[in-house]
Length: 118
Image 1 (cartoon, rainbow, N blue to C red):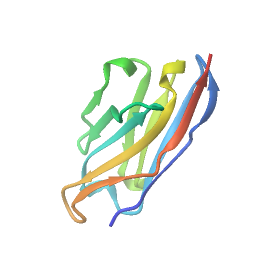
Image 2: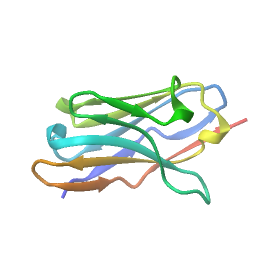
Image 3: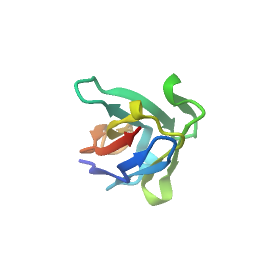
Image 4: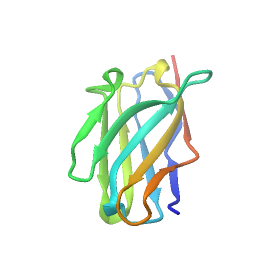
């Protein structure tokens, strides 16, 4: 089993920035894809951004040019730099790690809350 723990959420004003981190208990070399998802109150969980082991990234249209996903395998950590935050970015942000080598499977963290005030 792989444990993943998110951190960095909080309350910020619209236009502000936050950086989320996701730490894994195993080396991320075996995680072919990692991603950030979010879930607004009463909403469904949706993909925000993902990154593959070779650095390929994918972003949801609603965060393009504002958010940047990155990973540092040597520190077992995934990041999400969020700039120009909007109230509609409010929600719980979850880290996902999809391992295809070693402890195969999809692993989720407990989430970190991001609240953007207008």
